[in-house]
Length: 337
Image (cartoon, rainbow, N blue to C red):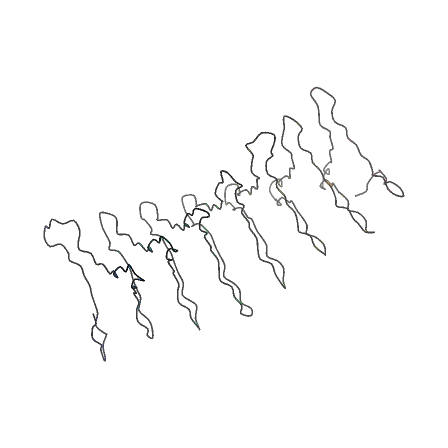
């Protein structure tokens, strides 16, 4: 099927239209258009290509369903055939390259609704007998001088009167094996500083700001196992290792927040708190532990060290001592801060 060329105007169009319903017909739908290549039991079947021609600006290719006023509009299905012995075919969406301008974009947007919920976008890998398929969201590498790789942003929309959506990242449960973990890792740097990880809760204009909670997993087993631990540590270094700071924010109109380090209650032995400075293996002085209360224009803050009380027996002891030394032990005396 071929239409004629034009020397001065637009080229001819090809329009394929299925039959409609005239008057009060007895049918329930209009006719369909099928573009199908024939089956081939001995080899590869023919392909089907929809493309616009090349030119100063190429034309678009649109695949749309019709609008409806009283029912659901039609669905667009892109699927490959099943395979018994080989791998099933893939669906590839690739935008065009450009030499001088930006490369083409790919946008996947669900439909909006005036009175009900907006549509969803689902990206789900296939199941498998051994391992399910993976989902990879990544930006391309760049090798140009001074160039930067693209960003990956996962965010929910803004709302005026309701609650904004949540972002949830979790791994599936494993009934007979260990569940997989979640790794959040920034890239290494060859010249500059390493990338940072910032976990920031939301601010509030009139209410309480959001909280940040990091909790280890619980264990449903009996006393033979324990809950997971939480470790906050800096990496080792040939130079000085990084610092760990637990700080509350400043306040001008009320008291600043507190820092509580508490072990949980137990029907048996409760957990202990240890403040331990690292050892020094060379001639440098070992590190110290300082507990200093805040200063004030009035009375300065106090330092209270108290042993635990007991209901049935004696309370705990408070011991202050210096360790043994090769030459002499340290002194216990009054400190001037």
